Image (cartoon, rainbow, N blue to C red; front, side, top):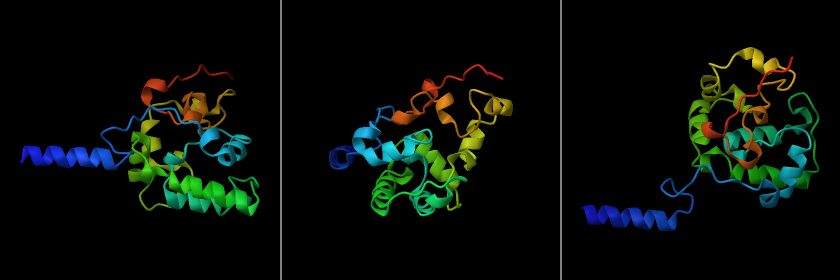
Length: 169
């Protein structure tokens, strides 16, 4: 029985590239190399949020309503929009082995959320942080993940990579 289980595990590891056994959640992702349009279009206005933070349905909803993107018109040419949407869906939370993807997805469930900061997981992980810090001049908003998660634009947001900045008023 142990041999059969070992063989099954080995087959799983060899046939599933993004498996939970081998996946390293702290590998940097070069989004500019992976999908230049996603990188260029999104980072031109705000922090580059990794696709694994939201589920497929959230990305589709967001990309299908870019004319009202959190109060701004972020409209794109149709071919660029569809290319970015396909990339986001392909790399959404459902396809990731990262803790933030799994727990965020679990907390979002079937809720209609397009902002990760609206997820119960995000709220719980940040509940001990003084809410005033999000209003500080150098942070400005809870959506400014890069203020504390220094490598978020490389797909790394784990605890060991967090540095809470001093507040500037």
